[in-house]
Image (tube, rainbow, N blue to C red):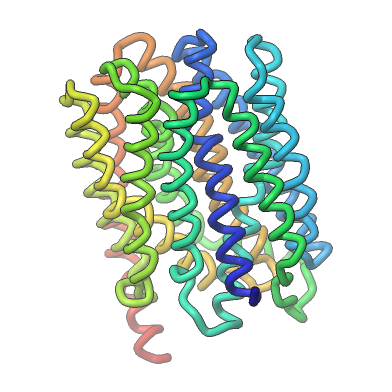
Length: 387
């Protein structure tokens, strides 16, 4: 198997693990008798862990100038930890193993995205042609996990998780490492990157748009269960969401344009708003599940545009750390606010109020994106025309 196919396979398998963790952890916790506020507390606390661990592993990767060896270690420990998590029932053990999985599984995402982008550049293929397999893995495993949970019970997820993790370990052992830049890592280059006003405004935009998306990721499964849906339907809903991403990622070479990233993020935020606003008024769990197909107009456009922008401005020697900063905003800092605040709103006022709140946040993200595009868009267009 050549290097690109190995990388595509690892994308499939890692995002399969991620779907079991992000999508079904809240559902699993609810099955163990936890309330929305307790679930929000666990996931929000995991966000704090992510804030520490993602920069840590990103810095280690940049300093050691390797990604593959870091992935091997993280996949191994994550597989074992996931097995124990989905075999646990007590509140203390659930918190312990969830925090460990946040520490070792979540840092894989920015490292893998860095590997995806770097190898796609070196191989002359589009980023989307590799990332598509991640969306496929997320979709297929979401569907599979829903059925496994329904027919074999919640604790059966432990065997599925460790099985996928073991195969991921074998694939990562055979993968090629990212091409190493000849530029040394320096703190001055990172300081210059982080002190740029446009960069800071862009990261703020990512944060504003990420909070409502993360609230939906955390509480959608619980909302479907509240409306009378089964774990199978939850799996189907996330299958539709992730499956709809595939064609968008695959065609990214056609629609993803340099200098248009903020406009694309604003475009995605429009459909985030529509999707979440409609979700607030739905009372049929099947309709809510089918609505998730709107994911194709939201997350893949938002995330692809954000990554392309980041790699266009970040110093080459800090790419892994820059990718970590992006993932930190999406999965860490925004996840903390989304989980704590979302858990409070859901527990105190119900799902309708929660989804009306996140639809307003998405609308604000849309407006902010259009403002930033108006400020910086012309500058980027001039640069691109000059090139």
